[in-house]
Length: 152
Image 1: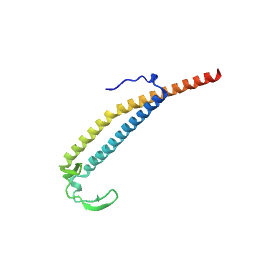
Image 2: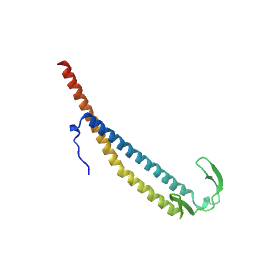
Image 3: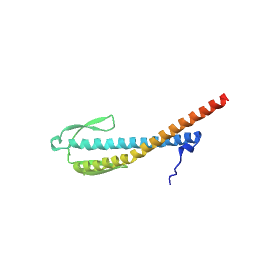
Image 4: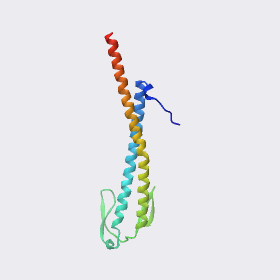
């Protein structure tokens, strides 16, 4: 259960600790969104690649990737069926249309996950900004108090 804290009642070291915690949470959420976007981009690219699979391209020469930087020549022999990597080393044979539908579902799912995380990230950013502003006020108050005692 979340506990509400009034940041005006916190000391400067407590504010510093809270800011550090918020920094970590913002970094984690930002990293999560970035990772989801990378995976989403891969699914979008895979879905777009299926567009070349039509009868007019059957029998044409293509380059088949063996690694990310090495290709071998090949011939496109079957444009109706594909193998889809469904994770952890498992592949499922699908029609091109079923594969497109699979990738669309994955893209939609990832979009929803990003949309769920985005508000939490914005909230953490706002909280962090409020803590920084309160820290600034506390520092100004300390400086004013020190200036007041040094004049007396």
